[in-house]
Length: 348
Image 1 (tube, rainbow, N blue to C red):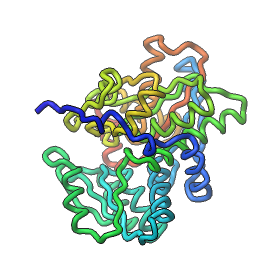
Image 2 (cartoon, rainbow, N blue to C red; image 1 turned 90 degrees about the horizontal axis):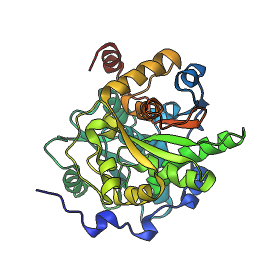
Image 3 (cartoon, rainbow, N blue to C red; image 1 turned 30 degrees about the vertical axis):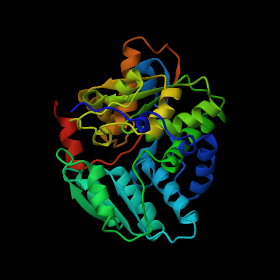
C-alpha cells in the first residue's frame, strides 16, 4: 500500500522541537561525561581535494559513536523530570550504536535497567557491546517486522515508569547530538576558521538536525549537506517532496543509515536548515574506509564514511570551490574487525 503521510508526519508540535538553547543545555549536561572529541586534519586529504578539510572524530566518543551524547542527554532529562514518578527503565530500538549508547548511558552509567530491541542481523560487535554495558536485548527481523509494533508489545511487558527513547526522533536526543556541531564550530572559531560547508551522514536525521541547530546559531553562513547511501535516499526524497517519504529497509553496508524514514521532528528541522541531501555508493564508502585507515590511521565504520564520500563526490563534480573550508563528521567507528577486513579487501 502507498504510504500517506498524516499531519503528524509533516507538522511537528512546536514545543517538541529542540532549539539551540537545548543544544547548549545538553553541552552542560555532557561536560565531563562525554568526550570532547578531536578535530583532525590531513595534508594528503587537502591536497587530493583542493580544499581545507576538518574532520570531527566521533569514532573517538565513548562507546565509539556520537550516539552517546543524545542517549545520555535524554536519560538525564527523564531522571530529573518525571513529575515525581521514579524512572524504572528505558526502552529503545536500534541497529547498534544507539543500542550501545542507551545501555552505557542508562544502565552502566546511571544504573537504570535498559531494554533494547535489535535486528537479528545487527553487527556482532554492536550486539556484544550492548550486552556488556548491561542492556537486555530483544531481537526482531527488520525485513519482516515493524519495529514500532515490536516496541509496543515489549513495552507492555515492562514496569510502569519505563520510558521509550527512540534513536533520533526525540527532543533531547537531537539536542545531545547537536553538541557535535557546537564543539566543532567553537573549536574552529577559536582558531579563526569558519566553515563554508559541513558534510553530515543521514539515517533518521538526529545527528544532522541537531548539528544544524548549532551551526545556524553559531555559523549561519555554513551550508549543511546531508549524505545518504544511494540505496536508501528517503531523506533526499523527503526534502524534495516536502513530506516524509517511507522506503523499504535499504540494502547497504552503512548499517547505521538503514532507516526507512525520517522523524517528524528531524524532518521539520532539516527542511529549514539543510541545504541539500546527496547520495553515495557502497563502493565509495569502502574507498573512504581505506583512506581513513591508510592515511589517517583510524578504523571508521561504513556509515561514518558517508560525510567524506559526499565531500569527495561534490569536489569531483565541481560543486565545491577550491580552497573552501569543509567540515566532515565521522559518526562512529564500531565495525567488526573481520567484516572491516573483508570490506576493505574486496570489491563490492
